[in-house]
Structures are given as C-alpha cells and as structure tokens.
Image (cartoon, rainbow, N blue to C red; front, side, top):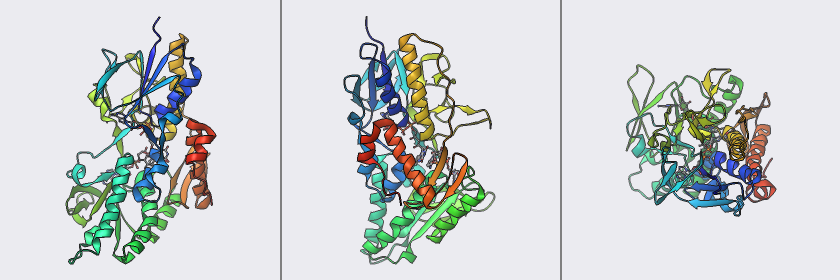
Length: 405
Ligand code: FAD
Ligand code: NAD
C-alpha cells in the first residue's frame, strides 16, 4: 500500500517545527514527508533587523536546512511555490508539481503596503535575507557616496522608517548603533545624519505599558531619532516621503533610504490559491485546519486565530508559529495513524521582548516588566531557545548569541 504523503510548504519557524517534530513522531514506514522551501537555508526572520542594519552578518542569521532534518525520513525540495490546487491536491511549483495527501502551509508573510503610492518602488521592507543584505548595502552605499559628490546630496544621509511597531523599533535600535560606525568609516559628521520614524497611530507599541515605551523612545531619541507620532506616511517617491497628521496638509521628508515596517499580511500564495482569507491570512479551525479542507493545515503568519479574551486575532509572531508547528505535527501524525480527536491549539504566552540594539531592550516576560540589560539578556535567551527547539544544542553552539552582558 502507498504511504500517505505529507507536504510541508516553507521552512520558517512553523514549517521547521512541524517537520522536526514529525520526523520524531512517525516512522519511515508510516508516511513520506516532503519539505519545500525557496532557499536551501532557513533564516531567523526575528534577527533580520540586525542583518538589515549591518550589525550582524547575514550568514549569522541563516543555517542549512539539511543540518536539521533527518534525510532518511524527510525529502527536501528547494523550489519556489506558485500556488496550491486544493481540488487536485497538488502544489504547483515554478518548475513542476507535487501531489499531497496532507498539506501544511507555513509560508510566512509579505509586507503590507496598504496600497500607499510609491512604497513598492521606493521603499525597502525587512522580509528575508536578500532584502536585509540589500538594505545594509544600500545604506552603506549612501554613506560611501556622500563625500564623493561635489554637490553634496543631504538626502543620502536621511533615513525614514515608516511604522514604529516591533520591527520598526527593533530596526531603529540596531541602526542607531550602526550609524556612528558608518560615520567614522566614511568621514561623515554624525550631526548631518537624519533618522526619522513616522508612526500613524497615536501610540507606539500599545502592547506595552507607557513606562516601558517611554524608556524605548527616550533611548532612541537620545541616539538621534526624530519621532513623528500620530502621523502617517502617505506617499513615497524618489525624493523621500510625504507624511501628515489626519486632516492636515502632508509635508515632505527628504530621504535616500525608506524602510517600510508598517505591518504584514499573509503570503500571497494564500490568495493565489483561492482560499478564503483576511489580508492573506486564513481563519483556521482550532485544530489548525482550513474549514472545509480536512487535509490542509495553515500555520504561522498565514493563519488567523481569534484570541477570545480580547476578540481580536493573535498577532503574527514566531512564538505562535512555533507553537502552531508543534500542535500541527501532532495532529498530522494522528491523521496518518487514524487516531482522534485532533488537538486544539491553545496559546501559551511566554511574553514579549523588543530589542533596542545589542545591549538594550524592553519586555514583559512571565507577566513581569523588564528593561535594559536584563531585558537584552532575556532577548538573547529567547533567540537561542528558538534555535534549540529546532536543532538542539549543536545548532545553538553554531549559531547562538552568547554575548550576554
Ligand atoms: P517564516 O518564518 O517567515 O517562514 C516562511 C518560509 O517560507 C521562509 O523560509 C520562506 O523562504 C518560505 N517561502 C515563502 N514564500 C515561498 C515560496 N513562494 N516558495 C517557497 N518558499 C517560500 N516574532 C516573535 O515572536 N518574536 C520576535 O522577536 C520577532 N522579531 C521579528 C523581527 C523582525 C525584523 C521581523 C520581520 C519579524 C519578527 N517577528 C518576531 C515575527 C516573526 O518573524 C514571524 O511571525 C515568523 O517568522 C512567522 O513564522 P512563519 O513560519 O509563519 O514564517
Ligand atoms: P505591526 O503591525 O506590529 O506595527 C506596524 C506599525 O506601523 C503600527 O504601529 C501601525 O500603526 C504603523 N503604521 C501602519 N500604517 C502606517 C502608515 N501609513 N504610516 C506610519 N505608520 C503606519 O507590524 P511589525 O512591526 O511589522 O510586526 C509584524 C509582526 O511581527 C507583529 O505581529 C509583531 O508582533 C511581530 N514582531 C515581533 C517582534 C518581537 O516580539 N520582538 C519583533 C518584530 C516583529
């Protein structure tokens, strides 16, 4: 009899957790497991702000997928997925197709531009290793070019960050540490560099209490960041951005670099495959399957589950994607083994830490507020834990962060 085929799409947090758990839960005779991912490597999305600012080399944020999967149980296919055809139970790849009996979609997110004019063309988003490398190179090029021009173009030294959510704030933390190094390297007066952060909502990081947020803002301001809160980016163009408060005429901030960090939507493959969705995220059942499709699980940033306590969706985070992966693996194994009932996903909130550069952070962990060095150490513990969960101690030794103090 043919073994059931499990196909996992995406080797991010959700996908790798699913596969590394499945390879332990199922024997070679029980199922065929296939993992499909665009690159031969996994990247820690949660470290990409560091690679983008240039404070951590991009090779430090990625590792080879083959190092964490068991080749006798999992076949890895490096390919770009184009869409899923659920009626024919097929995944369409750029260069072929793969049939499945059970499918796990864990393809992460795309940057959300809300249709704002010019963002696609003029702004960068911190989305993957290629983007991070390009952002780092672009900023460095602006600094390197500045002193070579007879007529100095001040906008080369102006960087705008659109969105002061977690990604925007964490990037600012790294960038403000990197700028003095760039100034020294390229003989540029630090006072000439302008860093502007534009946040549409009246509050930065509403998840945290004001004491922590004020700590973060004061620190970043002391390092030269100019915040425009309650002000939206309305357009990006070759000169910079147009920003404005509601009901006011927008004004221009000239910039040679625009970083767009104003939120995410589910991977476009979800829409291309025709699944019902809200901003690219599929509202899944508690067992993580798509309503009406008993053989398809959607996890991580592509999925949407309502947090009943506040009647709002859980945010797309790595912490949740990894917990999805664990539940998803157990549920897929149950289906393969003909066991029931499937397990419901229940979020175990371990807290959140927002870094402010290598040595500083704010956070709430196990219900306790922390900031400064203590929070920064905790952030590195969280980063190392993610490596440990997928690849055990050897991966932590290879890729972990050990500068704790
Ligand atoms: P991902 O981990 O993004 O993985 C998706 C995978 O699918 C990737 O390997 C990608 O290459 C692959 N893929 C995508 N499209 C295709 C295709 N068409 N074909 C083939 N392969 C494809 N969350 C936290 O909990 N804590 C944090 O500290 C934190 N920090 C963050 C910092 C930054 C800068 C950013 C951008 C996000 C951060 N997040 C954090 C959010 C977190 O990274 C995401 O929620 C998490 O990565 C989602 O996991 P995932 O498995 O759904 O997708
Ligand atoms: P986000 O949705 O958390 O924040 C985006 C911010 O951009 C919001 O504050 C929003 O008001 C603002 N914004 C939207 N439109 C704007 C406009 N036109 N002009 C100016 N500002 C605008 O998105 P994110 O920061 O990209 O994070 C994505 C996900 O990743 C979230 O779920 C977040 O929790 C998670 N994340 C977590 C961490 C962490 O835990 N340390 C770090 C990074 C990201």
